[in-house]
Amino acid sequence: MKKNDLLALGKPILLSVITSVDTPFGRVQSRTFDKLLRPFRKFVTGVLISSDLPFTLNRFNEIEQIKVLTGLSDYFDQSFGRAFGVVVEEALVLARAVFVIDTAGVVQYEEVVPEITNEPDYAAAMAVLEALLLPHKRRTARQRPPAARKRTASQATKKTPAGRRWR
Image (cartoon, rainbow, N blue to C red):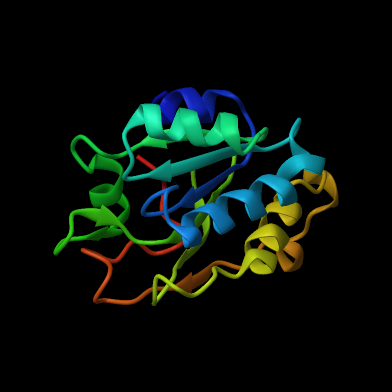
């Protein structure tokens, strides 16, 4: 699945980025976002991106009964990780991160978790996502979702500020 395929769905996108589904941290983040997104499954595209091979992601989604998150692998060339600045260069794996992208392809929220054992701010990501789901005519400039930014230079290869277009 490609970026344009995701944007063509016309829904906000939550990208849950993990190192591996075979780590306790990756499993917790995957299960948590899958559970949080279930009430919004018709209105949001949830994507789980990891450094795992595709068959590992498929096995995990089947065993864990992940219903909302679509698993995508960044194993082969780290193209996603490099584009979003979340490749841990020493190990060539992805850092834990969360991105929320609106229907126009603009990053409205991003968080790169500073330490792999820390949890992302699930509530903040979901608040931005829920704000994007408000009917457009009811949303004012004051209600626009906040562009959050939490990033650690040691994990990220480059800075990708919230509010930029996803290309």
